[in-house]
Length: 246
Image 1 (cartoon, rainbow, N blue to C red):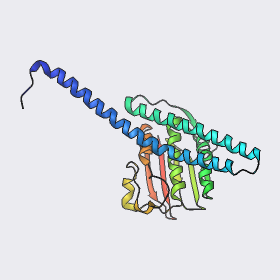
Image 2 (cartoon, rainbow, N blue to C red; image 1 turned 180 degrees about the vertical axis):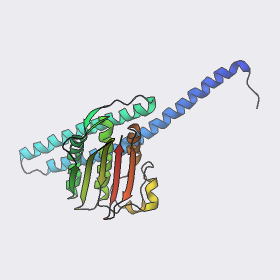
Image 3 (cartoon, one colour; image 1 turned 45 degrees about the vertical axis):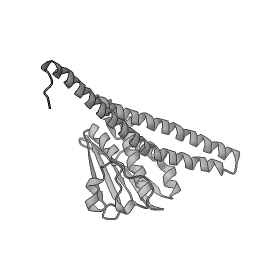
């Protein structure tokens, strides 16, 4: 191949740089669409249940209550899209993460309340465990709600009927622990390192609801908060996902 003239080298370098940025932008867009499809699955499932309840309500008041709950679900879905857009912007621009002081117990209570209809549909019980009434942490509220909703919705999907699911909030000396313990089948030890892959589903979950653990989203949020994720099978059965945020 011929070497380009010296005076064209800056132009070619600029074009290569622009093409690289275009490729990165297209890849981010593809990932955003995949994440959006995964993230919206849970709130849409909740919305469907709420509308079914309203449809079968024996009284007008109960029907109106069901519609009101469905409208709240629509608002949460809109909020989810905003959260995803926030995550996409952070990834694209590598901007400084906006942080605020958050009561992690209150935020956990909010996420549990939002997802409770899914657990109720499977007659599951969700217990919220915390070491103190208020556990403060400075982080991004939008992204942290995405994180916990991912963990809890996966636990609901992969746990059987009448299962016990635990959500734990614990203050640490240098941060906070958020953990979800489910009553599912667990994961083969050799598969655990692969759970962070986008929408990876292990063999034992083929007949379960959901499209995969989707822990890649969790990993992104944890990395932005300089944290770490620990995943293991509990001795009593089921999967444990523990997130330590610094």
